[in-house]
Figure 1 (tube, each protein chain N blue to C red):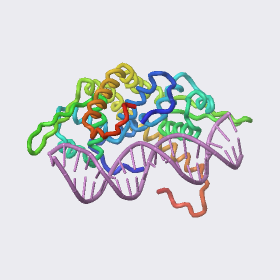
Figure 2 (figure 1 turned 180 degrees about the horizontal axis):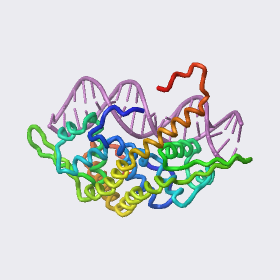
Figure 3 (figure 1 turned 45 degrees about the horizontal axis):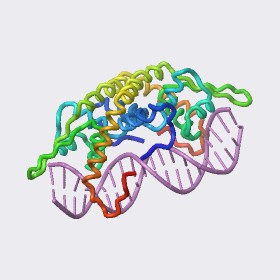
Figure 4 (figure 1 turned 60 degrees about the horizontal axis):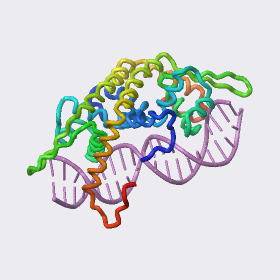
Length: 135
Length: 135
DNA sequence: CAGCATCCCTTTCGATACTG
DNA sequence: CAGTATCGAAAGGGATGCTG
């Protein structure tokens, strides 16, 4: 849990914290859904196809810990828990969506770059005698 | 290598690609250094404290594959390899730095949120008889 | 309903040794 | 100098079963 090095600049730690939270598998999806308003646990779970309950829990906990979402428990039966973005969470949504826009706008360029890199690389390979045709 | 689900929106895949590249352990550091101009392999390695040559290599390969950096080999002895951001790489730097600025500007808020979350959590814990004082 | 605990597999990362 | 190859540790992530 505690970083060992990469303190190139003093602020670098904080930057990496955010970037790796945002870069994990589910955070952005969760934050994005919560951007539309508060949601319950299973409501989120149903919305985000493929997420396990374990990952949803830990993603929400992480976001809660960092102050991006609030968790409100209603002591009813059955229990009800609402998750909602804080102001900080809504602020986070802005730069994240900028990055998302970048990704969307450059999707083709990146895909092309990959394709040409991969084919250029394939050409350089050892080309073993039993090489399968390109998959 | 192939994602199984989380295609909530068609663009979601592209977004996640970028976010997870940028969220990995070293990419942002490398891209940030290259933002100042082209650099050689060992120059980068010396600049980024704690990075192993394996991770620097794979980070650079990933960035090259996605079209964010160029790799220029000078067939001299000893060999020399320059890495430099492409236009796409410099474009990437913009939203990334916005997110970095967000991280820096909200570092304290996040740290506070964590501290209060952690202490609130500690209070709820089983409080074992031999609980160590806060580390 | 909203979780926690457990098991287990996969991916990521770091350390070390070797090469053109 | 600029890598590749290999190994093992650690973290991430999924499936399942159980609880208040």
